[in-house]
Image (tube, rainbow, N blue to C red):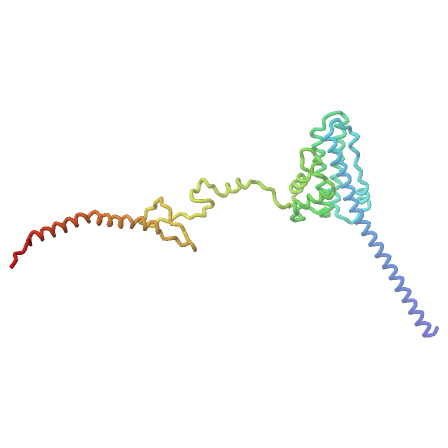
Length: 304
């Protein structure tokens, strides 16, 4: 084999090896992507399966609560093949959340069987129906944690707006008036809060009137609400009077009591004028007497 043939063989062999390695890598990448897509589809199928079961159970419980004489055939058995397939396949997923979904299914099945037995005996649902509604609320809570937060613990999620939970329920068709004498969305929000999820805004514990009465007693302070008006400081030697202070003008300076000065000095001026008017006739009489006496004393002068 010549050198040129050896170089050609070596180059062709390396090119074929590189093509085979590329093909194997591409095949492995496709298998990984298919596995990942199958895992995501399976987990999404769990959410869809639980949502369908819950919607059907809410509808069945609503019929039992609103229509008297409903038979046990209204309540259909619960099946969850998607969850069973995920448990058999051992898919890499949040096993804690999957375990919670399994427990939720067990509770739903147990409550539905108890309600079926109660209806089959011809008895009123009563407390058994209330327990089934409570189980449905727990199921919606577990579905929200699984679908929105990937099955995380409520303490690890952080703050969540309560209106986001309500919008999520509205988007999935959970009506607020599904159960009689109960607001379903409010019940789910309160159940999430009870499980430790921090929902905002926090519920009001007092009315505005009760809250401000706790902070301030307006009957105990005769000055003003919240102590905004300061009490007048009485210096030594001064006596506090009940008279109101002069009103404040621009920039907070007090106005001069012009009206008080007028009232103080006008009576004195008027008194002086009155005394002058009263003494005027007496002075005129004295002047007249003096002039008459002077005329009498002088008398007629003799002619020279």
